[in-house]
Amino acid sequence: MTAATRQEVLSLYRRVLRIARGWQAQSGVPQDTHSERNYISQEARTLFRQNKQIGESESIRKCIQECQARIEIGLHYRIPYPRPTHLPPLGLATQKARKLRSQEKRRKQAQPIYLQSHDETS
Image (tube, rainbow, N blue to C red):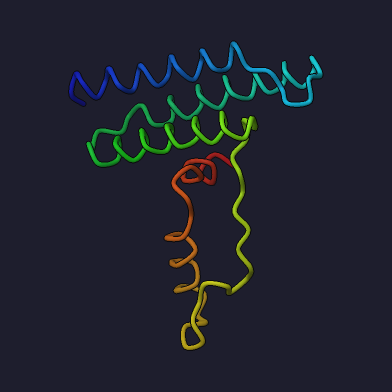
């Protein structure tokens, strides 16, 4: 990891923790605010520690893009949890390609970047 990339990753980590400290739940209930703050902090710690050993610059770049996307979506919708995608069963396969393997491949390709690590930790 280059020094610039390291600095960018640490900057993102600090930004997420700052967002968690100042987070207010949409419902306005103090208990919801506390649980959402804890979720944001724990999710950041888990994912950053999980991805600590990544050495390839392309993989690091994807993780950075995912983090930035999750930050922007969370701030925009005021929901700290990843927004699930709802794909109907066999909804991506063509009439000729109804095989399970090709369906799973298409589903993986259609998955938004902000949900890449969510499936790995769930």
